[in-house]
Amino acid sequence: MSDRTRQAQPPPGETGMALADVDTPALMIDLDAFERNLARMADTLKDRPVRLRAHSKTHKSPLIGAKQVALGAVGVCCQKVSEAEIMVAGGVSNVLVSNEVIGARKLERLAALAGDAEWLGLCIDSDEGLAQASAAASGAGTALHALVEIDIGAGRCGVAPGEPALRLARAIADAPGLVFAGLQAYHGSAQHIRDHDGRRQAIDAAIKMTRQTVGLLERNGLTCAIVGGAGTGTFEMEAASGVYTELQAGSYIFMDADYARNRAKGGGPFDSFEHALFVYATVMSVPGEGTAVVDAGHKALSVDSGMPEPFAMAGVTYQGPSDEHGVLKTGGSNKPPALGDKILLIPGHCDPTVNLHDWYICVRGMGTPQAHVEDIWPVTARGAYF
Image (tube, rainbow, N blue to C red; front, top):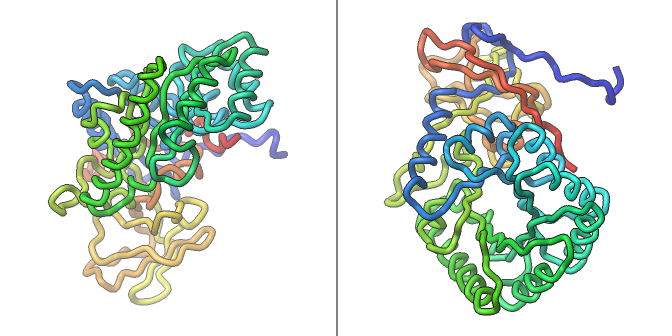
């Protein structure tokens, strides 16, 4: 079968199946924890003058995006045009590509998509990007909403706050096919500063730059309908700023091992959300005392943000992944896993781990004898990278 005709692999489980019968490795959602995470975010923002624009790069699923919108999210973010196409096709029609889009072909697709979407936006940080977006939208006879991205400390994309942002905003407002919609002000690296006070300091500086830029634009007749940014690690700080209008948190629905290493105010655990995403794995070899090998390595788990963590297995650590193997060190456990045992691994980084799988196996009653597969969801935007 050629790459062009490749079909998704069949799911490793079936609806109604007992958890223990699911094949491995499998990407698994604890539905009870997942639903509590969704509800906690919605409840936190319910009485605040700020909306959630949930980041779909985390889950790559219009089905999950629709659940977030049903609980109050204004829409979703994407990072790629292909992700946006999949979200709109799946019924999530308010979409921001929270990234720069460069290249005529990509922008032509985005401009065409604007005709099918309720609202569609992108970020711009250059004159060339502006010109390309304007040409594509004008050619398609549609309108693209454009946010000026400012660099507030991440050192990634964005123009400088203040006058450079004002100059670009003015140019967008004057460009055919574009609608000036506001600012993109996301500080990605701040999300993973472990110490709460350190995160607070970084976000306070970001808020100050953002507030000053919003004020400058408003004094020059440019209203920022959207001031977007924030992530799972800092969203409450931006929500309380009085400046941000949209929060772009994504990982909160799953809570990976990396985010769990953050500390809350006072030094306690960062436990606003629960672990809800796992990779289910089988012990395929026990080559010696203190070591076990599972069938989940690099092709089942991303380790760019650290190793996965065995769930509820004190004294067991995951080390040394290769393509299809993960080595567990079990010497610190008084109940090491045996050959054939199935275990849950918390991914170190949820977003790229999700992108390795075709299916979510959705389990109800995790941790109980009644645990079973309630539903199976496709990872619809898996591999959507252009």
